[in-house]
Length: 451
Image (tube, rainbow, N blue to C red; front, side):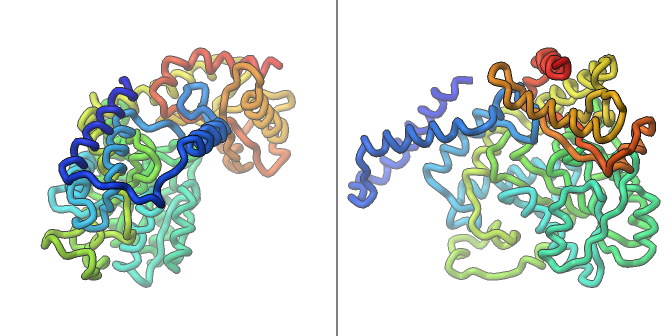
């Protein structure tokens, strides 16, 4: 895709639209010296080189990748206008796009046409809104989440002055259902957070089993699909269907288009199965809600100003890569295929060992050391990551995750636990290009170990 061509098209169309309103002279206070601008831009470009190559498949570290060119063009097209999706008055076109997007996401998750939702600036804010509604419905009860859940839940419980309960994880990094039931029996929990795709391991928590369990104790279920939510597109083909199909029966769900939705940062989403929860957002803003009797997005969100450009970028992307298995789903499937194949290569290796079987597109592994101790594994994992990242030629970029002694013993009982835990190597293969680059990546890791 020729990004330069479509950026030029976007700029040309913007100029045609603005010309319809007549010419005017920009104010002198906005004028800058082209020479000074050129110098400042050159400095900016130079400073931006102090980044890791998130765009390249040799970067297999954190959950970072560039947006799709369609997202860039869509975002830029709207950014030049700079609409605010808080109110229809601030962004009528992009607010309509946002509603269409939310309808598509609701359909993907199996929600009925009667739902409530909107985009947010992040998954953190989306989860905050879901927990805000949970507190409004059950003000005297707390929130349960897995010990392997994203830290946003414990943090947001603090923000909302709610009691958070971390439930121990099983030996696959998922919420332990026996421990959850013990907690539910106390009556202290009003909402359970379940994560189909944890950010550390990519573990798929059993949404269907959690939903069945919570029914017995009259508790709600919130699905944190910030990372894994779009894998719903692979349910029943590449992945077991049950956890993903159960989302339709859960009370709320969060997903981050700026992760697997190919968008630039600043694009999360929250959806509620029951549109009546909108009453908890009730407020009025007489100087912003005045040109339309329709529901303004700001009336059902905690955030005020929000970039309409985020909706435009996602809307255009989904026109080209729709929420189907053969559309956006194929992008996710490529990363998962890469993770599965790499796990097979690691199992056949004499110098690497899988920490845990991948379920999505995150691979965790560690060097085979002599002696086989946690301290040796910790040192070797860090050395591989550091050496690869700082190699003057042919660098690769991995990350590490810290595994506790108990977690290691559950998965690898033959390793001597001479420390409280150990770092393991962790690679996120969320770029579809990782599938084609995998042989090179694997060989490079092996070469670092051979040193």
